[in-house]
Image (tube, rainbow, N blue to C red; front, top):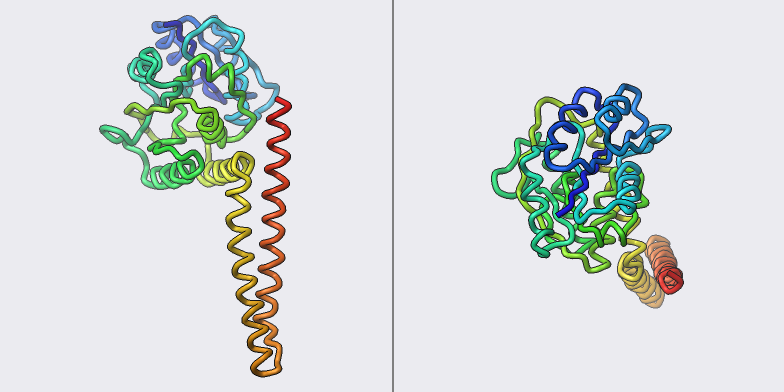
Length: 292
């Protein structure tokens, strides 16, 4: 099985050399995406003879994954492994991540930090990851334990069929949503992540906001009738209830209760807008898909 390993890297001059050296024992086909690093990340990687993709400025984690996907499309391989450059992943876990793809049991394999022996993850990150994963599962209909793991393996057909568009940290969720829509099999295997100090370059709050925004965006595109339609019907129902209540109160007392009337009219209008949005977006998405 031919393996390509993709490494998104931003200011990783301390780790990149030892990681590439260890990975070259597994495969010589390594893609390093230098995401506008301000240190010697690119120069060090280039000396090891890897395939180097340079971004002129820092575009974000998602942009790096996108560049790796695009570069891999031109290469001869069976599986692409994405591997973080911060030194947290273990080289020996690559075998278990690619195994389900080699056995044709999965198209995407996620290295999960929450299966088997749980990694020593800081509590605030653990809560954030699990909350985001729950939101992702609601969008994909899957039961994933670690939707934000950057340690993944992709079959060639996934790489050829999916091109990420999200430039931020929401790319992990985007890929899962698109893969679920296309019917790709997603599996997880346990991995161990080594947290030694604060090695992550991503602020947990900005990370969470980026992922949540991305999840909502792609869910609204993939399932517009559910995303906008269900809340629209709910608001319409509430609005009609308050309008009928206002009419009944006026019949009994000959007085208009302003608060009830405002609630009824505003909820009805908002519900109608959401319903119209769901229908319009569903029509637009359907037309675009047909043209593709």
